[in-house]
Each structure stands twice: as C-alpha cells, then as structure tokens.
Length: 631
Ligand code: ADP
Image 1 (tube, protein in one colour):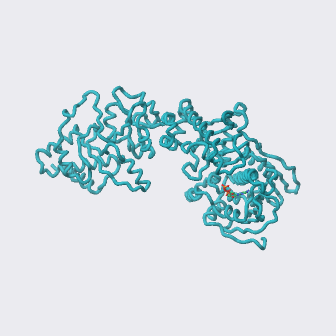
Image 2 (cartoon, protein in one colour):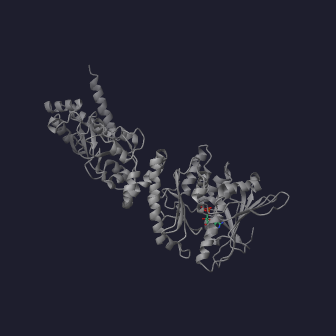
Image 3 (cartoon, rainbow, N blue to C red):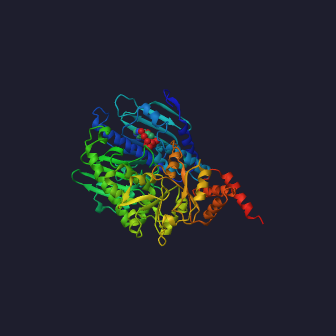
C-alpha cells in the first residue's frame, strides 16, 4: 500500500451491500462486467460531451474506447477507459457511498429473499445503481486508478478488499480516465478466459456505442492481439426494414440496461425516422414488465443523443410524465452540442419532438389495444394507473386517453372493457354510466349498492385504483353520458317491469323515525332506499363531495380529512324492515326495535368491511340468537 494512502470506512449501507454481494453464491456473477463496461461507456460519453463545451478539458483528442485486458497468470482483469475520470472527492463519494434512492429497498428485499432461503435477485443490481460493487463477486481486491478530465486535479488510487474499508492515495496515472484492476478470486478464474469474456461482452454490451477491445495473456504469458468484440454501432440508425423482431428484442435489453427480467418482452415498439420539421430518429419501447423505478423521482427515462453522441442519459422532457414507462432512445440532428444540459432540457427542438412522440406513442397504444387486446391488457395492468394521470394533466389528448381507458365491471367477468364498449352495451333506457369506487374488485363486486343496477341489467364499472377517484372527476361525460356513482346521492333506478312511483312504495316512516333518533350522532340521515333489492340496508354518501373511498385513500396518504357522516338507507321492500316498522308503530316502547335498527346499521357497515363497534355487534347478534331459540 502506498504510504500516503488514507484509510476510510464504507458507509453502513455499502458494507451491508458488500456482505450480501460477497457472501452469497450467485449463478450470474458475470453481470459485474456489464456494470463496469456500462460505467466506462458513461464516462466516455460524459467526456465527449464535456469536451464539446469545455475547450480546457484534459486530453480532448483521446480516442474513445474501452480496453479489457485479462492476465491469466496473475489473475488480474483490467477494465480501462479514457473517459471523464474521477477526482479524489468523486472517488470517495462514488466508491464509498450509495447514491440512489432505491438502493435501500433493494437491499431490504434481497435480505428478505436471502433469509427466506431464496437466492437474492442480484440481476436487479444495475437498476439500483450499485453496479460497481458487484465486482466484489469475482474479485477479492479491486484497485481503481483515475485521473479526472477536469484540469487541476491529481490522479488517485482507490483500493479495497471489500471488507468494510478502502484506501485512497495518489496515483501515477497520466491520461484521463479510469483503470479498474480486479484481482480475480480463485473460484472465478473463468472470467479471465477469452471465450468467456467475449461471450459476456456480446451478450450484455453488444450495443454499447464505444468499441470494447479485448486482449488476453494466457497461462503461459502469451498475449494475443487486441480485438474489438462488440458491434458499437447506433442500432437505431438502421432502417426498420433491415431489422427483425429478434433484433428489436435484443436492443430492448440494451435499452433496459443490458438485462431484463424473465418474460419481459416489449409489448410494442415504435421506430421513427422523422425528417420534417425536425430531423430525428426515435426507437421507443413499451416494456413488458413495470420498471422497478416507475414511481421514483430519479427514475430512468429516454436517452437523448445528438448525432450519435449521448447528451442526456435520462431526458424526461421527451414525453409527458404519464408516458414515463416508455423507454428507448431519441437521436436528433438538430440539437446544439455546445450548450449546457440544463439549457438543452428547455430547448424548443425537444418540445417539438415531445409533441410528435406523445401523439405517436398514444397511437401505438391505441393500435395495440385494437390489434392485440391481450397484450393491451398487460399494458393496462402494468401502466394503466400511470396513463390515467394524463386525463388530469393533458387536456389536449383527453379524447385519445379516454379511448385507452379500461375497467373491469359487474358484467365483464374479470375482463377489461373500454368505455366505448360499455356505452355500446347499454340497454335501452339507461342514460348514465354507473361506477362504484372501492378498495378491491372483490369488495365492490358484492356490494349491496349494485343491486338496483343488477336488477335492471345495467353494467357497473369497478373503479378500484386509487387514482380512479380523480379519473371520475376529470371525466364528467363520455359520449354525452354522465358518470354516476352507485354509492353516492339519491340513486333512483326503477325496475323494468314494475316502475314504481314513490307513493307506491311501502311506508316505513315509523322505523325511519326511530332510526333517526337512535343514530342521530352517527349518521346524517336515515331514508328509504331506491337502490336496494335484496339487502335490507346500506350506507351511502351525499351527492358531490368526497366519497368514502376517497376519504380512505386520503387518510392512507396521511392527509387530514374530516370523516363525513353518511346516510343510512333502509330497503322499504324488505320483509324484515317492514316488520320492524310495523312493530315500531304499534308498540313504540318495544325494546327490540332499537337492537334491530342497530343491527341494520351494523350490516350496512359490515357489507363494506368495517364495523365501528364489533364487540357491541356481537352482543346484539347473540341477543337476537338467544331470543330465536326460546321455546
Ligand atoms: P451507477 O453507475 O449506477 O451510478 P456505480 O456504483 O456503478 O453506480 O457507480 C457509481 C458512480 O461512480 C457512477 O455514477 C460514476 O459517477 C462513478 N464511476 C464508476 N465507474 C466510473 C468510471 N469508469 N469512470 C468515471 N466514473 C465512474
């Protein structure tokens, strides 16, 4: 060790990660190489971009290439680039801490998997930005030599055996960039063999844009000639007619970071060569599985190139946030290279590209929906709740977005239907689109609130995604039909054959009066129901205002919402309700009436899953049971 080297401790989370990486056995240790090559490629991109805007940058004419050198005799594997390099502070930060927010989640999940006897899914390592540390799977010591391309910094040497500490000292490196020396573990010698290295590089890094050159010195010290292993071409510049479905799938993996989960095949792609008014190429994919960072702030996004030079790794200005699940590359001929990234993000060209891409992606989704409904069902289940955000944020595309909406319903038997399908299937006389919001498909499917619609053959849409509460507010009408909640307001759907007038309904005023007195502190009102058919009672919300489901969602998000009192509805056609009403009017002092009313209230709450006073309810049921077996 160099005498001037300082010893440092890894941050706690790095140590935890390293223990995980080094102490477990993984079948796919090979991914470490993908991670290091991708870091090297990023570093070359950064240097190339910085060189365009900063004439002072060190070694501006350095050739962009990644060199991989294996030395079988000494068990050393070197990955070296002439990229942006790192200063002393950057080395300490980048190779001593974990920067990304998802990493801790990843760690916790991997730990849980390990504790339950499974192999932790280290494949996800790249998605969480802990890539560098994966090299400790195959190396028992790593030396990093780096010289920053920014003038005025000295070269540094970082070294660690992955055991909780690392050292940083000076280095003799004279060209900008980073050299990573892996001292390969005895059980990982395969990663020094030419054949193995070549196949790993082709498998994961074929589309890395910079040449990856490999040279191997074998056990006898014989060194072969250095050879470029990867394609290193801009895949997207090739005409679509020359590319097969397999090519597109292969490139999809590259776009997703070199690796996809099993079964993650793109559900659709879009390859555009646009000439006017702006010249650009876009190759975009709808992923087959939701990316792990879909709801994270620092999530991945589209890669933006300007004439084949990567200028923004995650450019979130190329599509609106509600299409953030789309991944791919955009390469423009019309972007200036010599402005800062911040300015580029606001450039007019990006706005114009974004407008076009938004339209085309929405069209792609509509095409998948009409041509491949089964695939669209997957798109919807993965990304539907993200797409729905667009209804609120992008008024300009409301019509297209409404066309993409899908719901399950009281009649769809678990299948998804569109609003157009819903309206087309409406029986004569139905003049509104009915929906129910709630916590789960199971709970809304058996809700008493559906009874009147069921009796009439009206379909009820199940809205069980939290965001649906906002969707219904943004969708006042669909094809001139208003949306109506079956749990709110005074729902009056007369039955087909016996269209009853209000006067014809049984009079249950006595029980209503009693119930109002008894429950006055708990409900806002008690009234005769027009929506119930089989059930005796249910709870409903006022028209307008927050629904019960919305209250639940806001509370779960720790928002301070007052609980609104609800309305208890009793079914005037129900024999039990009628009998209670009769007894209440004939013998107002009968104590059982109070218990029965309480039980009607309990039942209504229970049908929705929550009873305020379960112990009291048990007592009431028991007293009724007791009286029912009296001889
Ligand atoms: P990620 O690449 O996902 O950020 P890593 O742990 O692989 O996570 O790397 C951490 C950071 O270290 C990188 O973001 C980069 O800033 C820096 N780094 C890693 N390798 C290199 C390299 N070859 N050249 C310059 N910087 C690098």
